[in-house]
Amino acid sequence: MSAPVVQTVPRGFRAPGTGFMVGGSLIGAFGAYVFQWYGTRVFTPDEFAPISALWTAFFILVTILLVPVEQYVTREVARGRRSLPADLRTTLAMVGVCTVVGAAFVIFTLDRVFEGNPQYIVQLVLLCVGYGLLYLGKGILAGSRRFRDVGWVMIIESVVRLVAGFALVALVTSVVMMGWAMVLGPLAVLAMAWWRHDRGNPDVPATSPSGFLRGYVGGSAPAQILLAAAPLAVLALGGDSSLVSVMFITFTLYRAPMTLIFSMQGRLLPYLVGLSDGGDHHSLGRIVRRVVGVGALFAALGGLVGWLVGPEVVAFLYEDEYAPARVVAMLVAAGVTAAATAQITSQVLVAEGRTRRLGYAWTAGLLAAAVVTLIVGGTPDARVAIGFVSGEVVALVMMGMLALRR
Image 1 (cartoon, rainbow, N blue to C red):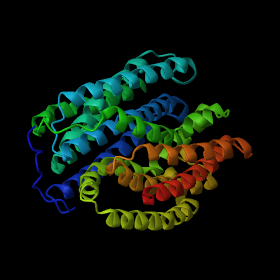
Image 2 (image 1 turned 90 degrees about the vertical axis):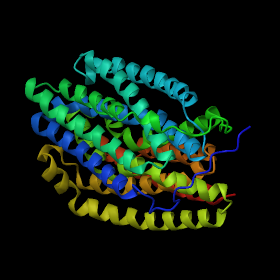
Image 3 (image 1 turned 45 degrees about the vertical axis):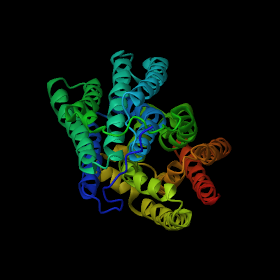
């Protein structure tokens, strides 16, 4: 058996392309918000509800099923193993699950949420396929430390979606055209031909994809349901289409830290893999303690800022009818910051291959959120917000404890 390929590029955060990757993630996030802002300016909250539900469903599915693929590929390529074609088969299997679950959701809610339009079924399926290929490509590029190219992936995806949204809605003023613009974003990234950079050694033994992904998906499923399912939870509690759009816009805007972390964690993971493979558990423990401590402080500050200016920020960026109640803004801001901290902490467990522990932390958080949402009183949006922040705090505490535990 051939010796593993040894990475000789710089390991620290000053490696070439890091700055561009950060800039690309910011541009990508900004483009996503402009896309949603444009939709809220053209369409009323009731008209925009299908895109709110489509984006929510696609976000939950890809983060549960496809972001773990990116993390697996990043870790394997960083170890010096060639990813293709083996990991393409793994990706397509996860894409298959994504399309089946996503199509079933749209079909089940077609008349209530999606205006009875079957185009949304096709769009959800194509989103799963497009983002499956995009995350596979990001994993190969991040694992091979081509961080500048990762930045370009995020820029191209966001800019193509935005430009397509402007163009298609200008041609036909229909909210379904924004769904087609969403489909075009990830598919455009294929023009980068990212598979050319998969140059590792095929003889390096692979980490079991089933074991890695089973643990990761088991953790990411409750994590993303907790983070992104608020609009659907409001719908289940009796909220109308307008309130669904309000919660969608609020959560999407406030979870900007999570969007950036999902984009940047491919940059962090190779560094943590290096510490883990080198047996530097002391440094990993120090990172966990610092992240949890600083994150708890920022969660409190985030809640304060949400209370003071949260509704005003939403009303300024979108329209007054999209602004949440002040207490909802406070709770969502604090909860999203706690979620971001837990996600950063989770990368230590991913680097060490201890992905099963992710499920313990996020499942505890989701159960706490569900229980609190059911027992508290109030309007649907307030109940969901209280349950959300409770669940994220529980998940953060559990994640820190499990990451420190050897």
